[in-house]
Amino acid sequence: MIETRTKRKIENIIALILCTLAALIGLFWLVFILADIVVHGIGAFKLSLLLEDPAPPGVEGGGLRNAFVGQLMITACAILIGVPLGVLGGTFLAEYARGRKIARFISILSDIMVSVPSIVIGTFIYAILVRPLGHFSGWAGAVALSIIMIPVVLRTTEDMLTLVPWTLREAAFALGAPYYKVIIQVVYRGAAAGIFTGILLSIARVAGETAPLLFTSFNNSFFSVDMNRPIASLTVSIFQYAMGPYDSWHAQAWAASLVVMIFILFITILGRVILKWRYGKR
Amino acid sequence: MASLYKKNPVDLLFSSITAIASFSVIVFIVGIFYVLLSESLPAISRFGVLNFITSTDWNPVRESFGAATNIYGTFITTTLSLLIAVPVAVGIAIFVTEIAPNFLKGPIGGAIELLAAIPSIIYGMWGFFTLSPIMSTYIEPALKNSLGKLPVLEILFRGTPMGIDLLTASIILSIMIIPFTASISRDAFNLTPAVVKESAYALGATRWEVVKNIVIPYSKLGVFGGVVLSLGRALGETMAVAFVLGNNHRITTSLLDAAATITVTLANEFTEADTDIYLSSLFYLALVLFVMSFVTLAIAKFFLLRAERKYSR
Image (cartoon, rainbow over all chains, first blue to last red; front, top):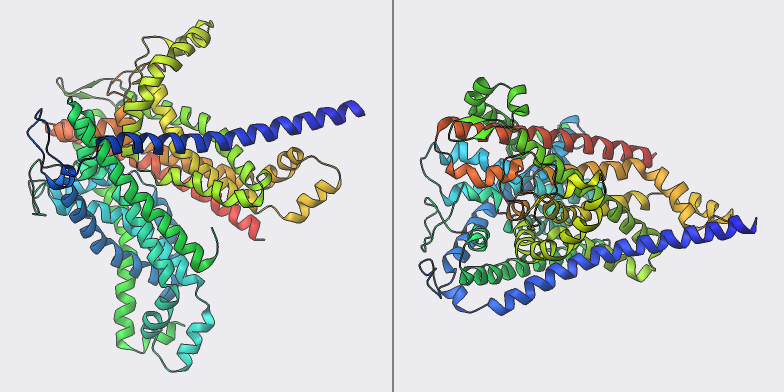
């Protein structure tokens, strides 16, 4: 009797210690990776990284101004394409098609599409936008990223609109407002913070994407703002520089990684804070 | 509700625009499948389906392509990463839901989820410059000298430890999927009714017994869905693996050998494909990957939906 009790207690303590260890392992990786990027990144960061274009291979100095500008342009264009489609699509699921089978079907498909390998989307865009036109282009990269954004924005918009109480819409209907006015003036306002968070998180998701840009926007060692031509991006430059043979390239890759990581973590945490402040959960 | 918006022409217009936007998701999924299929038709007609999947020959010079080495690499890295990640992730979920004091639950859960926010290129950088040297100088020689001396396990640790191999890639992948499994498991655990747990505590059960006999059986559907979802994500991970796997088209039993996954092959060779049949074979690979991950994710979604329905009753 007493023996089984001690045995149960020991088993309990061992299991609890193992679970605590698991949490520590998770935190260890997070701290390890973040600290590693910060240490290497700060050591390698120079202002010239932002202000100068790449030097010829093997020559010291230079920067990644072209990649910063290219990344901003590709991401901005992806937002311009992806956000309206995502928000409007989510509106259809939560409002006009609410409760219908088609809404549920599209919702499930979007959930699946959120996790579809991004490199597959890159090959798809290569087949429909790069090869027919005969050249890589910034637009192709932007479209690839927007395809990744759409399901993310669409699902958060749907969830956030569903959270707006139905009685609020009925109040507006009772005043004689048509449905589209109810959606735009009442429902969107009620869900604005949530939709904004969804957009932020989708930006965080695509800002670090590399695989879909490899065969769409490709890369460009020169400064270019022409979206019809190959354009440099930070992530593809990091890949190229990290795999390259020069120490100065490696240093720039670390510094660029630090910038990308700070940007993405900032947006992610900002999104979380807004969600917590507005909806009081997670 | 339907009659509400059919009377007003602007409403009809707005509802049509939103409908078109949401149907874009279907268009993309069907479009990806159709385009990949039509692009890979030359390779399909030349190499067939079964032959392509089982052939280990990947030779651009002789224009002979088989996917077996890539599928094998993808299979080994995802399986190994799941084996490493799932126990840790479930442990984290148990810690966050049942063990940690209340003021730690939020911060620790949030910190683990931040692992999912780190982009894969950063995992790749870190893996290539930091983890890989650690693996080749300390961990892999140690494994080789301990487990590598055992009779059967020995085949897993043959070759020189270089740090650019299946083991390193799997460890990085496992770190990347921990947050997905952990957060879904945590949500599933949280749905266990407090009354049931309290009843078990009242009968004198220890905390571990409550977790083992009440919480896990109650939430196993959700946890399983989370694991399959992580599998689906691991299948398609590209950049993190591309840094540390090498690009070596052969089937190897040793975890200390370089290999190739479908994603790594695509990332490395797509822009270099110089013949039509080469490019078509790469599209064929992308199609195989798309179908594999779509089916896996659909299965995951199926289990998660079933779990949701079970708990909402």
